[in-house]
Length: 130
Image 1 (cartoon, rainbow, N blue to C red):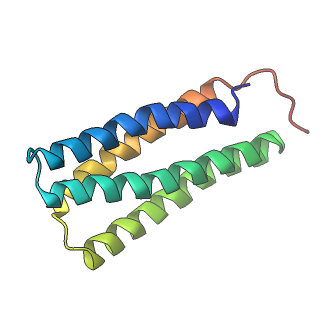
Image 2: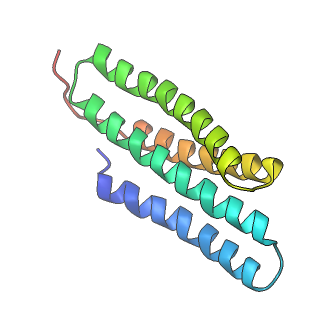
């Protein structure tokens, strides 16, 4: 079974270069402040969603098969609804370009979703209660 520590390492290896590139490109003037704030905000929100999903998946592993599926798929639905709420809230409270923010948000969403799928595919040889 893949450990939480390894997932956090992979998360950091995926996140740090993107954030550094965003900061450097903003400092060099390649991207504007609006896109830069969209990248940082979208990354922060998706990080919260990712760690929430990771926590739910680990909780589900300790349960029976039926509860495991409820944790995984129910958690996915809950996170999608939370993501929708966060997008609406962010766009209403912060003055960001809707197109930029939504594009960057979903790029991060699918990037972290692929990491979550990788994590779930590496689960093997663990025993759940019946």
